[in-house]
Image (cartoon, rainbow, N blue to C red; front, side, top):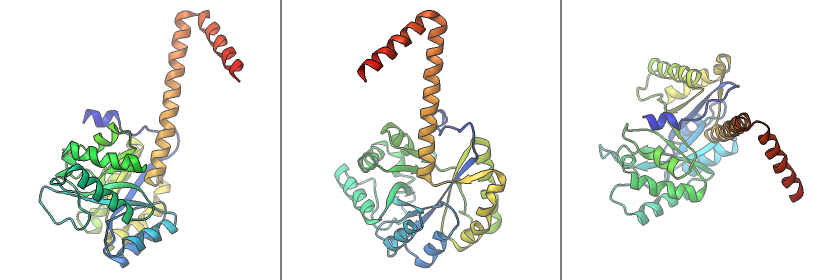
Length: 277
């Protein structure tokens, strides 16, 4: 948990809190998928591979400027059915990488991946390293759905230098308006407290009806809805700013210690730079 706190996204010093929403499990129902894609704002959509409507729904979402992700099926501890394109504990590295590449290729316009189920596979660091190797070669980010507290997925993504996020709130594992409202309000509270929150939901009619009403109102609470990749880009920029400020403070500290020698050193560096140009 300490490692998670150390590497959580940087909180911006200015600007609104950010909310990231991903609708999982698109692909099996065209009607439910289209209703979800019609949600206002930059909601992201995670599509199951090799499903009847995966291509059509991914194309539709992309045409509306929405972000498309792969919802990669991964082995779970309850051994529930995963569907086509599943990544399992019995696969060797070559098999797992081939299946994952095929899954990614089957869904157009994919910019990132999150796990579908995966309470078993995400605990296995070697398997997650194989997954992240494929994502690294294809330039994709990873969102850890965190279906188990023992997940190693986000740690593997971090170690491979892959942009990553972790789910904060599941919105609708109880499919009624009262529960969804409670979870959504908790997500907004988290966003305001830590500067961002990541919510995952599903294309259930009750969820979509709730979000159609709730999303247009979050701006009044000082919260901005952003796509995962947009948020990760903002984080990269924020980290660069933080690193630049830390470097500046370190230089100021050196100047304080060495008094005028620092100014002389900076002048020499500037002269060398000018000569190179």
